[in-house]
Image 1 (cartoon, rainbow, N blue to C red):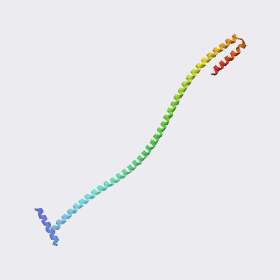
Image 2: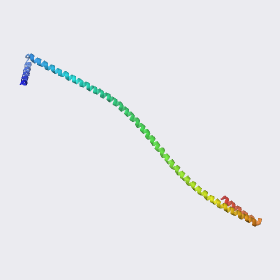
Image 3: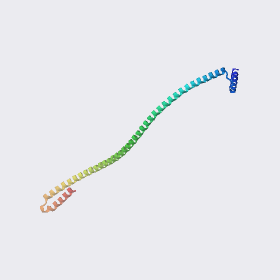
Image 4: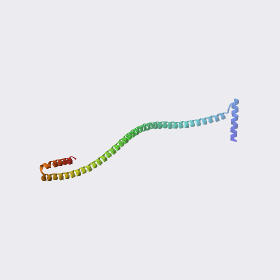
Length: 180
């Protein structure tokens, strides 16, 4: 019922005010208290909102500072990445150069090994040929000694006029054997 009485009072006073009738002191005091309470609530709300605004401004300032630091770090990171990319490119070029050098070295090494193998083969063939020639010289030397003895024996057994053609033949054989 209290609520109904308050509503009735409010309606009555509103109608009286609308008609221009004087408002009671009690009503004015109630309105003043209500207005003061509303003002206190608004001041409290203002202080609360100002504190929140200050907190948000501090957060914004921290975020700005952090974002500025992040931008600097990011710029430094990008610069460092560009330097690393350039260094990577230089290393890749150097690696390609070394790969070409290694390839040339391998080809040269293979050519030298092939040349060495051919030289070894030719040396073996030359050594075999030397042995063959030494054997041939030995045989020819034995033949020469044999023919010399034959010539000497013929010289002892025959007259000088008869020996001239035979000596000529011996000299020719000797020259042929030595010059071969």
